[in-house]
Length: 191
Image (cartoon, rainbow, N blue to C red):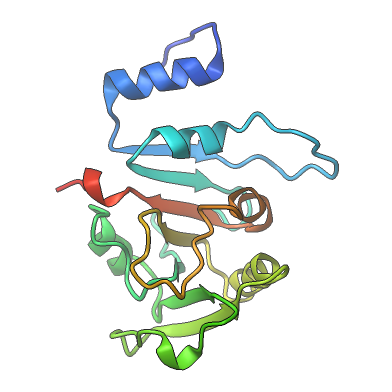
C-alpha cells in the first residue's frame, strides 16, 4: 500500500516542508516530456536538486526501467557507481555487462591525463565538452541501449571532467532520453 496526502499551496514550499519533515533516503521523480517550444518551466527538478542532498532518480518513459529485468547501466565521469550510493552493489549485480562509462572532458584536457578505469570489462566513451557534447552523449546512450545513467553530484576531484549537474543541467535533463540517477552528495552519504 502506498500512502498519499493531498495538499494545497505553493509546490516548492510543500516539497521543501516535506523534505525537512521526512528526510527521505531517495526521491523518485518523473521526467516531463519534451515540449517543442518551452519558454519557461517550473524548475521543480532543479529545485529538488538544490534543496535535497540525497539520491534523486529522474525516471524517463523512454528506455524505462522494467522490474525483474536486468538494466543497462551507464556511468558518467566515473569507472564505478559512487561509493556513497547505498545500493551500488545491487545496481552492478543486476546490470548487463560490460558497464559503459561515458566521460565528458574539458576541451584542453588530453585523454592521456585521464585516470584509467580499474574495471577491465568497462567500455569507455570520451567526449570533449562543446555545444554538441550533451547531444552526442544522448546519441551514444541510445545506441548502447542504456536505460539508467548514474551521475555523481559531488564535485569531482579530477578537474578534467565536466560536471553536467552545473550549467548544462537543464539541457542534459531535456536531451538525455534515459532515466538519470543522481547520487547524493558525499557529506550526507547513507551507510
